[in-house]
Image 1 (cartoon, helix red, strand yellow):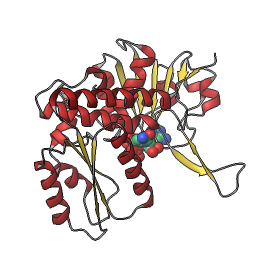
Image 2: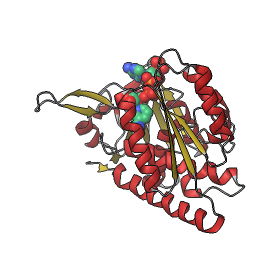
Image 3: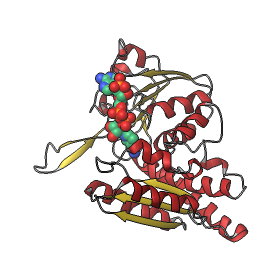
Image 4: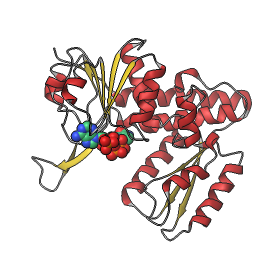
Length: 299
Ligand code: NAP
């Protein structure tokens, strides 16, 4: 079998188009412009790039982008004072603090300071708890994006065997909760899982979020399975000295020879993350004003 390559870039563009459509309707019908505030502490070059991409996508979708750049030596009290102001600002519906923050700041305490109703990264204990207990959570963007891809590919996921490799708070745990909500039978695998290849071979849906390049081999994949490769590892480019390339957690060629469908790296899951950040901002704006969030943009 040769797998269908899931075009995450094209699907993310579709979601961003849907977001823009809903933003235009919210403006026209309710005078509501969703606003996303991004806080960047320090000058991490990769973070600067991510924040730039987020600003561009936010503006392109017709939303308001608020950007707050703080010096690396910003104290926790100063950061929290800004977050408190954003929490209280009715024009701000989503707040995202770009991580990593400098070492003297604590990521957990920072996330906890953000109003859960504006926590568009879905990282707060409140949103994790709402997701686990079937409430209206704001869901972490990358797992939400994977769920959207899976629904688009497979339709109803009920009864499918799903294996998620990785149990981080950022990805693995919310991904497993989302699949459980879709009535999958979910196995969470991790570094202590016994006979991981054998566990993976039972999966109709195999999601790998480990960060170990090309770990998942074709003979770990059940024929016809849908493989979602979340991992990103930057390695030296084999043919272009001084350049790098990205590798996923799955050995693409051997997995694609067995799977029914597979996401490539890059161009699979990656583009979905910003699309879902925009979707979450629309969801937060709708909920803040007592409107129903658009069904296609939520879990
Ligand atoms: P993480 O916090 O480092 O978690 C990695 C997980 O992988 C842990 O649960 C770990 O198990 C498990 N693991 C490590 N070695 C393993 C092994 N040999 N066999 C099985 N499981 C193993 O990473 P993360 O934040 O979840 O991210 C995972 C990957 O996804 C990274 O490459 C990251 O860059 C990528 N990612 C991409 C996006 C995106 O595309 N936008 C977003 C998020 C993450 P233990 O818990 O037992 O240690």
